[in-house]
Amino acid sequence: METSAKPHFVLVPWIGSISHIVPMTDIGCLLASHGASVAIITTPANAPLVQSRVDRVTPRGAVIGVTTIPFPTAEAGLPDGCERLDLVRSPAMVPSFFKANKKFGEAVAQYCRREDAPRRPSCIIAGMCNTWTLPVARDLGVPCYIFHGFGAFALLCIDHLYRQGRHEAIASAEELVDISVLQQFECKILGRQLPPHFLPSTSMGGGLMQEVRDFDVAVDGVVVNSFDELEHGSAALLAAASGRKVLAVGPVSLCCAPSLDPQGDDARRCMAWLDGKEANSVVYVSFGSAGSLPPAQLIQLGMALVSCRWPVMWVIRGADSLPDDVNAWLGENTDPDGVADGKCLVVRGWAPQVAILAHPAVGGFMTHCGWGSTLESVAAGVPMLTWPLFAEQFVNEKLIVDVLAIGVSVGVTKPTENVLTASKLGSGEAKAEVGAERVEKALERLMDGAGEGEDIRRRAAELKRKANAALEKGGSSYNNLENLIDSCA
Ligand code: UDP
Image (tube, rainbow, N blue to C red):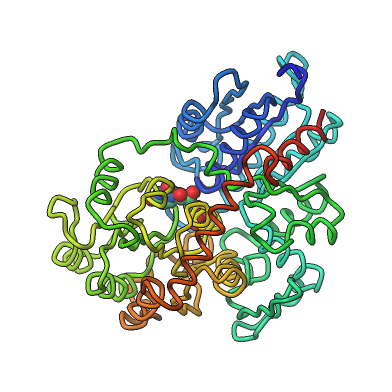
């Protein structure tokens, strides 16, 4: 079929977080590689990130463009360039960010409805908070899909909890809530570990999650960064429960291999450090694009990392605002710039995570269980040490540890506050929940080459094979992408 005869997808990633922008851009690249034409709409500050991925992953001949629409920061009282939630400095600014996103939505809607547009959209795929795309899609008479950034298992759990009315009566923090959505697996989590939809109102405001839920049930389908072989039929169960298409098209991080070589000095330094280490020997530690631990917890974790038997690459976010004593401790105990080729390399900037996980030296990933990181780890066949912080991460931990058995839990029971969930930032006195000894024990279980660790590694390797197969011609994600394109033709 001619490219021009294929449908035109308009993708509007939720700009709250890099972890939404990156996979949606990758979905755009995958659609383009299947011959669809794609326009990704974003804001000026986020455009370079989107454009750089599009430039590097797009196969020759693919039709994909990036459109920039201003984000009304000044109007909303936000600092110039504050176009992502990780750039928001206080919980008080969070409502202004969402207000600006609504205004941004009006401009996006106007753009999509333009009569003189080179191509009318055949389908809109919207990030979860971009609820304003639905009326546009309805006006244009085209399907609207949602992308949550969550996995299918978490989405199924959330749907299940809504159907149980869990959003109407907030669970107590200590209550064990049943999230057994898969027949063979009993799953329960504490009330305080539930996704934000079922927690008391936070700095995001109570109405937002309901708005997202209303949007979610009204759209024509859900696009998920996952693959059908991974989540024990969760996507199909969600489709059956909700009566919408649920299409797993990932792992989308694989769309860029091998062209996404790490760029920049810091990234190259990470890779060079790994080059000097033995296969499967390194523990990679990262808590995502926004996660950071309170100082007391950071020190307990650090003590375990510097004394364990394995080399460690430790990414620390928010490193600029660490207290002096923590900085001093890091300076004395870790290798802050990699020059000493020490045992524990601290990365204070942005680590090239996908490339790191794919490096043969990496044998374990201590992760906050964000879905992007989880799936990147699965795609690379790297076993996980789970340390959930907030959002749907405690649910993802259940999938990793109890359902897939490709990880070991550190044993965190309390969520960690962030800018969206906190009443105040940087509660420096927060006590460490997890002591160094517990972290070391979990590391031993995961990294030990025999027994439990070996079984976990074998299962992770098997899932890596399935993840890669899913995107190949005739694989489940490949077919779901074709299905998505055909349904919009
Ligand atoms: N990431 C990265 N380098 C970093 C930190 C994060 O490349 O130093 C990427 C990571 O590869 C993943 C995303 O940021 O794609 C984090 O997404 P995830 O869903 O795991 O967590 P979130 O940031 O939403 O908490």
